[in-house]
Length: 120
Length: 106
Image (cartoon, rainbow over all chains, first blue to last red):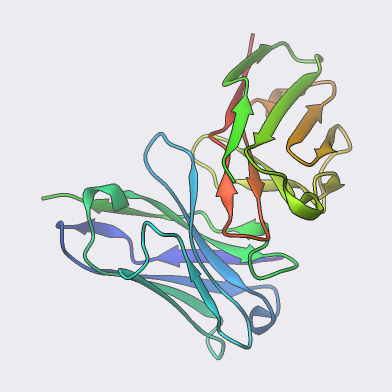
């Protein structure tokens, strides 16, 4: 069974930083692209970033490019999202997701999410 | 590609059929379109990928169809657990989601 467990969310001031983690189990983590998707309170889903397997190629939504960095540690089956210069618009639940079939593919498994609140 | 879902809310009774629409502003190559279900307080769950392929473990009451710019998710014989919000998503390019359709109990 695929399990994804996010951590690292919390309250941060505008302009601050936060690092999210996603611990994966139940599948060959090293072999799959992984992604972050977020959902602002009461709103829809927004893709944030994806990292491929092996080549470590990264993709970002325009809204986070230059501020967020995705990375992974295949030895620990863990995905990360480093978030800098956070603004109110970044307040959301951040979901870790396993990507199916292609690097910018659909998301076939999701974690339960971690809440990031940006507020002074 | 911008995805527009309609209707915003669908009010139906258990046992009825639900038809949800997802329209893309540009043609989606190779039908790279997925559908998700999300219940309150839960993560989304993949239902359909490649426009019409059911994900593992998904009931055959859920079916996807369409191509190009117009896609449909059909839920036959609504069960109580089907009342939720449904999102379409295009992939193969930077992924984008529709704004969602809420299926509520009438």
